[in-house]
Amino acid sequence: TQKQVINMLLNITALTKTYTISGKLITALNTVDLTFSENSFTCIVGKSGCGKTTLLRLLSGLEPATSGTIDYGKAAKIGFVFQEPRLMPWLTVNANIAFAVKNDPSLPAAPDEKLLELLGLKAFQHSFPAQLSGGMAQRTALGRTLFQNPDLILMDEPSMGLSPLLVSEIFDIIKVINESGTTVLLVEQNAKKALSIADRAYVLETGKITLSGDAKDLINDESVKKAYLGE
Image 1 (spheres, rainbow, N blue to C red):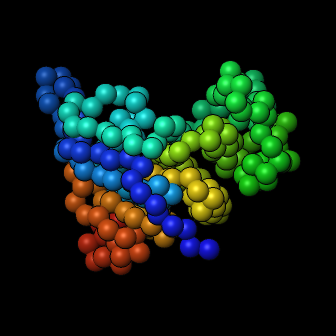
Image 2: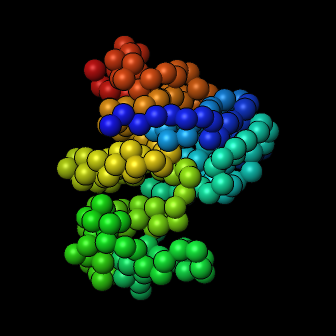
């Protein structure tokens, strides 16, 4: 079924982030404007160092912006999936998923079978991180974020370091998560894969949005093909 985009979840206006490194001013983000609608799937593509991760860190509150505004609207709870799984090695898969909300009485103490089945983790729920493949560790990290019931999930290159088969599996799960009603913002170097499953897309180059539109249009854009799709 075709999901419906309802209204604005989060709005960014003139967002700018600068750093001073060895006395030199570096502009990581330059007056970025973005809007994310409820239930949407947005991807931001760009080469390494273009500002993608910085944008996610500002949206999640891990770093303050230099200037500009972030209107969180209906995005009361934001989840973050990092490039690396960052699992607790002494905890099982189940315990890692539930770790971030262990003091929240409104949430269950452990993930239910539905979540474990979605992530393909049912057979691994009592395993420890050292026993997991890279793909299973990334699924566990995704489960940890989903378990918090976020309004918006920020994903920082979840395909990093995974084989093409595992990348496809992770992206299939992300698509199901979005279709179930969770808003997704995905930043990826794997532009072809990201554009193939997102609704809307932005191209970020040296801290500025240079192109935006429907993902299906950008995947056929000649400049995008040349710069990011190797065509």
